[in-house]
Image (tube, rainbow, N blue to C red; front, side, top):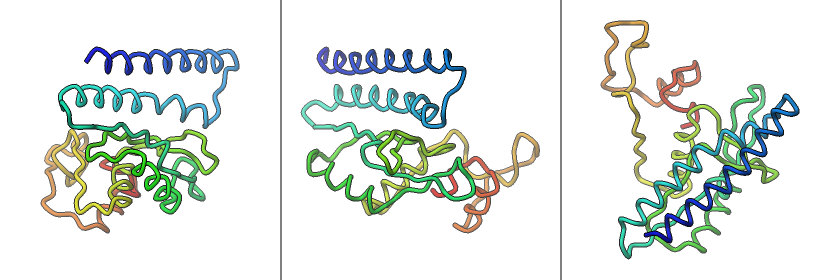
Length: 193
């Protein structure tokens, strides 16, 4: 509907103005703190989820669909040692999700991935492949029976196909093997997924 489009476009326009101001401040200061970088990096995820939500709402007819900003739910703190990795605080996140569900009693939700908040409530991100980690975290919080992650590759490969010409998809991979690959830098999914 025109009203739904107007709402999403108004939100995107306000976000772009804020982002433009933030980027200008970074340019003037010639620096950006990790918190500012996280705030900037999270916008793409927010915008894509809002646009998808608007399209689905238009196609859903009378079926209600909510949009969930993961920054309102997922609380993450940095892990010790590696500053770019974060771990979800499931107790705090579960409380936030329970409150959100009470206020949004619908069956269909478009949720952002990748973004979260730090323990102080400041917007943050989960880092590389953080959307996979978000999906796994929401599946855990919702006690889901299944989690599907769709990617642009045909599975986990026997080797890096950019280096090894005969690399092929593996038929099976144990949890421990997947964890080891992810921890050693394989980019198939976030190590905590």
